[in-house]
Image (cartoon, rainbow, N blue to C red):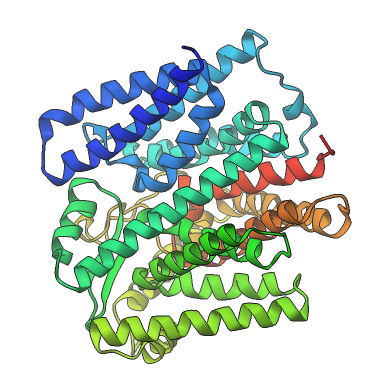
Length: 480
């Protein structure tokens, strides 16, 4: 019974996830509170029985659950993701106290002390500073919540210390990303063919479920479907590409699945209509090519050409537009306020506002929750304290001192990861490809972080934490 129960609970959580989405679609409000209570109870029991399974489901929800897990929440604040995370931490602490889990991996990790500072010291210090400066409490908590996700590293490294479980975690991560891409692509095509109304999708995801993102019809007639969890798509594309080019022997079925997954992830990135993603992926692919042979580079180039041809066919069929003109024209507007007066104009205004705040308090910043009410009205932005210019946002909130510390941690991740790739000769091709993919995903994340608030959110921090976890796994990997 105890062997069957964890899997039964996983299935129940998955079905509850689907039912909650249906309840949001059809506005079955009477179901939402009972569903939340049932799912929380199931997750609690699952965590108690199999903390590793609970972590797998938590990653699944993190990727598919939208901005902050607001597909199911208690009121307007307490989302189910926060409840799940609290349960994970409480059960983990209990098992540590009962000596069912060892703290040895934490003591041995070279990253532990840095992540303790990011997970605890940052929210306490800059949360207190934000309170002193009088910023709204809900915005302070919103910033602090993201940094608490660095705690996830300690759970992963103690609950999933073996290479076999780390591979399962990567598989769950990739399957979740591909599933999200398939859903996004399907909805995009249904909307573009007018089977589903694009404005209904906007009302559903951005209104009822508070997924975050942007949905609608662009001035050139192309549709846009960009959900808040879309940041994971670019990482998935890079990891899948690294696996395909690694030289790791794949069965024909496995290769076909990866090729199909890359196609769906690519289409989801195109559907996002987000220049930051496109530029980030291009930059990360350049990083990836540094580690490829000439033969692998030619394969990558051929794959890119094929995907562009498919995209051209899709856009001509759906919108009567040339994808090449659409893509390169959209990239060209990145540096021209005249061609894109809306988003670029907003970012220019952010430079003035954020730059002034940095100059006023350059060293320690103005604290978490910093909010400039004159920037934009709340009706036009989901989180008015989260600015699109991510690095300036970080400098405003925790100043040069905090930003330099955070930057040194990112540099350390790359140093350790590249050291593994160069000198860990016993690492097999599959694990080497995964390391390539996650480091490339981190490159993309850091690029897109310049024009988005993802580096301060649970999404960006989740990928950073997973990358550090894998660095630790591969650095200490033996042949067990």
